[in-house]
Image (cartoon, rainbow, N blue to C red):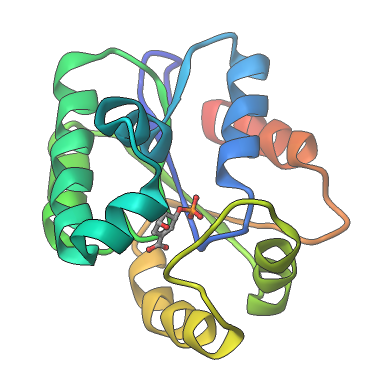
Length: 171
Ligand code: S3P
C-alpha cells in the first residue's frame, strides 16, 4: 500500500480507534481526522446531544453526509470512524468508492466495555453492558468485512498497535 492511500479505522466503541489514529498520524507524519469530532465541530453539538435530541436515525444521516464530505472534499489520509459508521451498507460503498484501505481494530467485548465504563466520554448507545454487548455481537459480521484485522489486547499500547499497522499495511 502506498503512503498516498487512505486508511479508515473501524471497530467497536472503546477499542481505541481515535488514539490509534493519533499515533498512526504521528508515525506516518500525515494528517488524521476523527469522523465524530468533525460532526461535532460542524453541528456545534456533541454526538450525545445529536443522538438524544434528534434520534439515532438523524445522527446516522449526518454521519453518512459527513463521511461523504471528508472523502470528497479532503485529502486526509487517516480517518477514524465512530463504532457504528461502518455498519450501514451505504457508508461501506462510499468507502469502497474512494478506494480506502479499511482496518478493523478487533478486541473482546470485555476489553471494550472496560474502556467504555472508565471513559469520560458519554456513549448514548452503550448505556449499559447488556445493550453494548448486543450491539457488539450484531456488528462482528460487518467489522469482519474490513480489509485488515488487528487484534487489540489490553497489554498493547495504542502506539504499539499503530506501529504494527504502519509496518504491515504500509510495508
Ligand atoms: C457509536 C459510536 C461512537 C459514536 C456514537 C455511536 C456507535 O463512537 O459515533 O456514540 O454506534 O457505535 P466511538 O466508537 O468513538 O465511541
